[in-house]
Image (cartoon, rainbow, N blue to C red; front, side, top):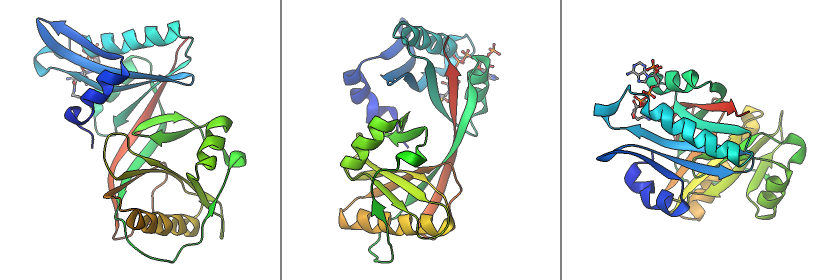
Length: 234
Ligand SMILES: CC(C)(COP(=O)(O)OP(=O)(O)OC[C@H]1O[C@@H](n2cnc3c(N)ncnc32)[C@H](O)[C@@H]1OP(=O)(O)O)[C@@H](O)C(=O)NCCC(=O)NCCS
């Protein structure tokens, strides 16, 4: 998981790092504006200043910046078990848009996979994950990712499974995979390929984000379940 130390400099350099100060900083969040959406991350309020509406104030401020930019949607990711944040988000009229699972996979050499590279426009999904941000997956992005050989799929048996491979921008040698699982066989095929790719390219960690539950494998560990919260800004 990402800590503040890991991302602080990165957020500072990106801009839109918002602080609430009461003599010293007591609350923080970061906003990332991209195609038609704002991503809100890192909301944290000093424990002595909670329940005073400060987090809600930060979120509302980001929403107003987004509206100025004619952005229609706001998103944030909340751990399934973080009931305080979930109730905060619901109070602010966010709803659970999708639920995602985070798995870690060990890199491992093998040759039992048969996958293809290519564009999968016909199977377009709404979002993919780039450095733990869920970004819009439109045709233009699909085309770009496919040109960079970042989209792999398997359709040897049953519904197609698709994976998008990206490098973490915060951590060295960390592969982040968005996986859309169609059938178990196709998904196992992709997972084997990704494991082998991870070993060949010397990745230390492979992080898989998927809406589906993945098959049990001893190299695959389910870490956490998240809710992707969405609000329509109008
Ligand atoms: C979650 C967190 C950001 C909330 O900050 P906050 O400034 O206390 O939140 P607000 O005062 O704006 O509260 C908004 C709503 O959230 C809910 N809420 C927040 N804290 C709560 C608590 N301790 N008990 C019950 N509900 C709570 C309530 O619905 C509250 O509305 P209400 O006070 O009108 O009932 C803060 O507790 C925190 O920093 N937690 C640790 C980090 C974290 O979990 N970050 C969120 C990652 S998405």
